[in-house]
Amino acid sequence: MGGRFAGRTMVVTGAASGIGRRTAERLVSEGATVHGADLTPVSIAGVTGHRLDVTSEADWEALMSSIAAQHGHLDGLVNAAGVIRMGTTAETSIEDFRLVMAVNVEGTFLGSKHAMRAMQARGTGVIVNISSTAGICGSPGAAAYTASKGAVRLLTKTTALEAIALPSRIRVNSVHPALTNTPMADAIVDQLGGAAEVRQALSDMMPSGRLAEPDEIASAILFLLSDDSSYMNGSELVVDNGFTAQ
Image (cartoon, rainbow, N blue to C red; front, side, top):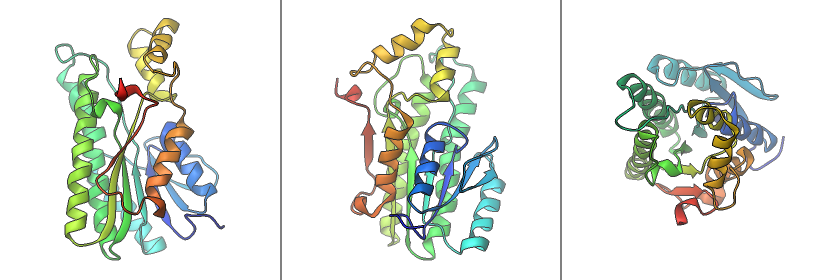
């Protein structure tokens, strides 16, 4: 299959739903060989599914070994797996805080670690980490999530500088979506009481009066994975329709 990602092998975590799923679908449509990883089954035409606990180093090692055996190289990784637990700093339990940090931060760290190792043999590849507008500015009531996404933002920059210093042509960038119409948005609504008024209030927070759609975020991710962003490294691409410009 032709396309701008023809001949490239990509891994997408969190591929069972939301931004991860749409990114995997788009990559397949543009010619990539895609491995979709998640805790729940990944069922996407043209995508090889893997069960992956992003907090398990053994799972990451097994996934990378499988890809090396099948393809001999890894061209791209999208760290899209994530969870959210709503709560202020004073209200959030240590258990919820640790869960969010484990999935969002440790999962991104482990993915980046093992992808970097896989990419170093050829000295080329792209990692895209999904952070959030909550990783740039405060988000009262989402203490654990903002902490995790701020960590992803700076982990991205550090890993990018390390890649440059190797030296290599490996690039590492982050995408910072505003709230997006995904199962995570549903989880936020549920955790805040589940009322229709809550969902409307979340939409009203956006300058455009609506949430982002997964396809709009996937377009930014594919840009960073592509050669069109060849001079972007350690960058943060904000996709928020003006939310952080306020």
